[in-house]
Image (spheres, rainbow over the protein chains, first blue to last red):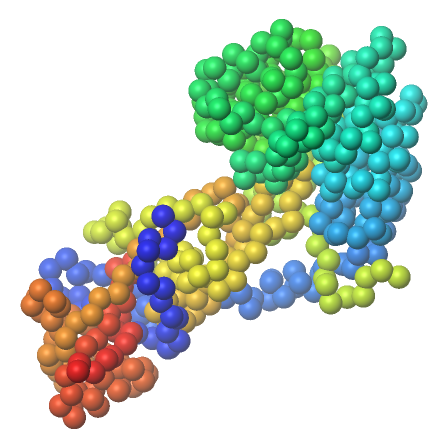
Amino acid sequence: MRGLGLPSTEPVVQPQHYLRRPSALRSLNSPARYSSENKEGKTCDSPVQKKRIAKMPSQNQIEEMLLSRTSPVAARMRAIFGLKGLDNSAAISALEKSLKNDSSALVRHEVAYVLGQKKAISALPTLYATLEDKGEDVMVRHEAAEAMGAIGDSTAVPILEKYAKGDDIPLEIRETCVLALEKIRWIASGGAGGPTGGYNSLDPAPPESSESDIEELKNTLCDGKRDMFKRYRAMFTLRNIGGEKATLALCEGMERERGSALFRHEVAYVLGQLQREEAVPTLIKFLKDDKEADMVRHEAAEALGAIGSKEAEAELELFKKDKADVVRESVEVALDISEYVTSGELHYAETIDATKASNA
Amino acid sequence: MSEHDSGSSGASNTVPVQAGALKKGSHVVIKGFPCKIIDYSTSKTGKHGHAKANIVGIDIFTGKKYEDISPSSHNMMSPVVTRKDFQLIDIDEEGYVTIMDDKNETRSDLRLDFENDDIHKKAKEDFEEGKDLLLTVLSALDTEKVIAVKELQ
């Protein structure tokens, strides 16, 4: 559709031009859009734009923002994604430092996620240590294992195999390790592991290339007897199909799943990517359910933030003082995401001013 | 009601296009104006990875700069931009031209601006010298403008 095969036009720089003469020919009652009283036209030299640029921090400042104990959680999140966009070892070191030291499990889990999204091979030892740390929050350990899958390097296989089975290992972690192993195998066999469907994320499973029937995909998604990787593939296929029907299929998959909190949390994440308001009632239901696993409630909150509707925002407000740290902090982050989504702000992540000196 | 709103032919003069599919050089409607994109960048995303596109365009008629930010997944309108050549038959004292297309259809609803537009001024001078001229008319979003003048050989 783009360009329509028409010849490109050179911009004609002139103070004004002429419309059709309104009364000259039939059906030529064009509005006087370019008349002199037309005050339209906020140009990009606006003071707001300039201020936005002036406000940009240096890389050091973003690192400080992440590592400071006084930064609000939402600011630390924006800093994490700021560092995600920076391709240097200092950014990775700062993220590793945060993964080891931050007081918030929510922040640590996001850092682990981003190290995976960055395919930070150099951070693998830190991620191994996180997965092996029995005192660490399950959500963070899960994210460390998932990151190994996103990185896709086979050196992680032995440790993932070790945590893929055993009754003493939490179910979420075992399931994640199985998925990560499948993902690494998938990549090793030549499968594409990159972002799909226009979503800028490395996902734990690739979409199906051969199945596009929503009903069929929903059956696979909801079938607890199928292997998890297959069900995840159906999930990401539905996400990429998008629209109301696929969204509702995902909601149904989330609501019908009994056994796996990991699965429910992943559907909630995907619903956040889809940003469809049809998912709001389901997400609210999970956020409200205080018997639900924190990782699911956390993901439901952030998905509601990503959707950013009034109803979603109003619901989030009610959970600002939730008993669970992860949920309370997620709500704070979700309200910040919601503000971003509904604003004219361009970047979510902290963005550096490349003209400022960065690394010390 | 915005000034560019046209009840008559609005349906066919734009086509929807995803903000994420636009690029430098594409045409897009920004704040109601048909623009050619001169700068396109996408945002740094958060956990769900939704990008916004920052689009700077120049109005193809006026050269004025406009900016918009839109989620990549949202549709924007792309103006249907056409160029058509007409033979110049006459210019009246108000600056209105009578022109004819390749099917011998004539029209006289376009006006030249001799004061502010060098191309239009040149057209008048050449016409008064007795040259046979071909005018190129650019149209988009119910607006039309003479943007080039060629001498017929």
